[in-house]
Each structure stands twice: as C-alpha cells, then as structure tokens.
Length: 589
Image (cartoon, rainbow, N blue to C red; front, top):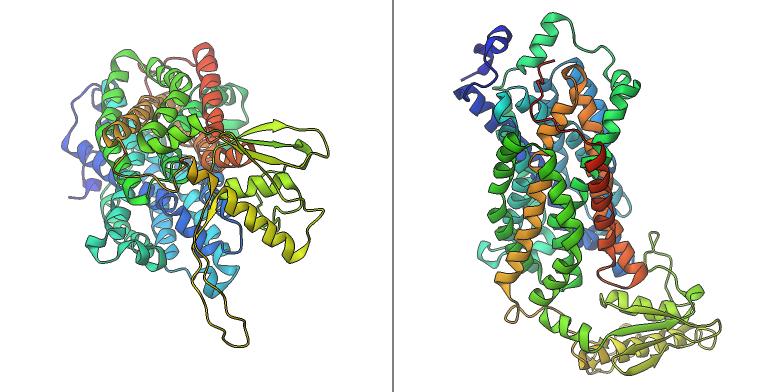
C-alpha cells in the first residue's frame, strides 16, 4: 500500500488532534522507527568491534593509545553529527521531512557496507585508517540528519495526547539498533556459527557490516511508502514555511535562547547518561574488568532487552505528568548513583579484582613533573625516558588501577603493591638495549611475562632459548589477568546494567517529544537537530574516549565517571531553573 494515495494535507488538518491512531499512522511509526533502527545499528556497530578495529587499522601504536585512538575514530562519527544536523535540517525544513530521511538512510547504509569492504593497515598502509575515518564521518553526517527528521515526522502525525508515546518508538530505535548490533556480532563471533572468535578477529568482523546492505534495501522499501508530514504539507500549502531556517533558528535571539535552554537544561545530561549507561558500561566491562567480549555482550543485550519497554512506559507517562519531571529525575539518579553502581559492577563481574583492589592497592610514588599521560595519539612516545613513565606504561598496558603519591624532584619512581615496593629502572643510567632489558625485567617483576618457546638458529639469527613464564607481583597478590566467568555474579551484573539502561529510558524516552514541542514547525527540524547532535555527538559520543583518556592520565579506573556525573548534575540544576514544561503545547503552528 502506498501512503501517497491516502489522506491529503487538508484531511489531516481537519482531524481532531486527540484521535486514535489510524492504520496509516501505525505504518508511519513502524516504517520510520525500523529505518532508524537500521541506522543506529550501522552507527554503533563500530563501537562493538573497537578493539578489533584497533588491531586491524591502527597498528604501530602502544596498546593503550591504540584503543583510545580506536575510540576517537568511533567518536569521529559523533563529531560531524551537528554538521549533518545543519545540512539535513535545512533541507528538511525547506524541502520536506520524508525526502530528507530517505537520503540519510541511503548515505548511512552505503557507508556502513563499504566499511566491510575496506582493506586493513596490513594491505593498504595509512590509507586504510584514512578511508575508515572518511566513512565514519559520512555515517555521522547521515545520522545528524536522521534523528531530527524521524522524531519530527512521527510527532507531526501523532495525536496531541499521545505524542510522548508515539515519539518514544523513535527513542527505542537507538537502543534497539545497539541491541541488534550486539546480537549479530555475538552470533557471528560464536563458534556455533562456524566463524568463532579467532576468525572473527581476522575477517569475520566484516560480516555484520556487509549485512547492512540488506538492511538498507529493507529500510528504503519501507520509507518509499511514506507520505510527507501533514504539518509540513500544510505549511507549504499556506506559504508559511521558512525560507532561511538556519538564520531564523540561530540568528534570532528568541529561538536561540530556546536552543541553549534545551541543550544545557536537558540534552547535555541525557547524552552523558545514555552513553555511560549503554556504551561506556560495555567498554568498562571489557577493558577495565577484563570480562571477555562474548560474555559482556550477552549480559548487556539481556539488560537492553529487559529495559527497552521502559522507553514506551516513560514516553506514555510523560503524556500524563509532563516531560520535565521524568528527565530531571533520570539526571538526578545518574549523578547520585553512578559511582556506587560501577563499584558494585566491579564486585559482581570480577570479584577477584575487587578483592585485590581492597587488599593490595597499587600506589605509584613519583615526581609529578616526570609523569606524562599514557595517551599518545601519534604513537611516537615509548614511555621510557622517565622512571614514572616506565611504571605507568606497564600498569596502563595491564589496565591496573592505581593511586598517585607525589615525591620530590630527583626521586626515582616506585610502585607499591600491597606492602611490597618496586623501584623503576633509572633511564639516566641504562641506555639502548640495556634499558629495554631493564624495563622488561621490571615489567616481569610487577606484571609478569608469558613463556617463550625455544627457537633454533635460522637465516643467520642466533638460537633463542626457551624461557618459562614469570608470575608478576600483581598475580601473586590476587590481581586476575581476566575475569573468571564461574565466579561472576551474572544476575547481579545484569541487574546493575538494567538499572543503568533504565536511567537511559528516563532521560531519553520523553526527550524527542519535548524537543519537537519546544520549536515552531517552520524551523523545527533545524532547531531541534543541532543542539541534540551537539549534545549526543560531542558530549556523549566523545565520552568513551575522554573517559578512558582520563583513566590513562590518572590511573583510577573510576576516574572517567566524573565526566558524566558532573554534566548530569549541571543539567539537573539548569533544567530545574530554566527548562519549561511542554507536554500540552500545540505543535501545528
């Protein structure tokens, strides 16, 4: 059925704004939402394979930097989202909502499919990560235009008394897309499918990207059935559509003030709560708590599926009590409980690590002037010129939590594990190969070293004698190299992850309806898209990279959570003071 053949703009305008959903409106919600699910699937797929992407496209960097750089490539898509919002928002307000989000779906689907076809660093050199970044940025541009269009389109079809419920279907799409990506990645990397973990890391990671081609065809088939928004048709018919939406949206103080209130009083907090509760939690499980990828993905998808209905619940509730109370409550709970929840997550997911942190804390004593961040974007720092860097580089590679104690200038840095202290090699006294050997020996003492098999002499190279594994002090006092699935309290892990996603549903479920209601229809697409994508693209999208960079610099695995806690708290204060309630507003004007 082609919806172009049904319901003219005049017929829609004549409808009571409290009518029950028609068959066509249900199809509109389904087609809009499903297309957006596919776009979120494409966008978040990268985050699930960030560590593998680092190995395939970012070779030559140290392990910590490689992972953070992989997260920055992930973030590149977020950085350009506001620019996509400007470009496609303007098109959406000038030409139409439907036309615009058909374009965004096409750009997103093709970009994702092409990532699955890219050569790796091994075969294409530096061109490989460059192409990856370009495609990632195209994804971001497309998503920058998609969300505002889908939310506006559905809201402009919704009855006034169910706008929160109808738009919450769009809000589900981000989590549903993430869950879909997690599920497909799990299926492909599972031995049951015939690919398995090793093959997945080598070539199987391409399969979820290539599947995007199928999803693109389905999404386009659905969206080509849709007609234009009745509100937009009415504006065009009456000649009231904006001729300069960018100037009108951001060049006039009256509307710009609303944009700023929306950003600081709602979107900023929503963004950091969303990305902490769903993405940073996943990275934290794998990178900091050393839970294997398949297990962490399984636990997260269970939590996502359990919490997803609450997008609809809070969306519908916002139609009755308002958008603001629910969003503010979510920000308040996040600011108050973020730290205790992630401490509890450590206890539940890796009890051996939690015990070691409590009974054998690690302390680095060094002159702060000699300590650099372990984040090295260009990969040129070997972290071997100061005793402090030697220690922190070893601890960062092992993802070990530590605290810092300042020492006077001239002090050789040391690390204390429990009650035992190890002094780092002095770079001023050992040079060249001797320095490498001294650092390797120190690292083996502290971290440990794997066994080395014997190698016979070949091609003029001397034989290499076998070396047994070295058990480092961290292992001796109980620090695990990886989380033990048998010791893990999986029900508690799922419960904690469910709570984090529940906070996401509180701040995210009602926000699309609120943003639609804040702005007039003639500049709605442009006005709501830019602040939304600055918040979610920059504050939220950069959160994993910033969080892990903060941890790398400070040493405390929980230090990165200060970022979302502070932002959520600021949004709570500013939102309570300046954010208006919108749920009873008429959006047809």
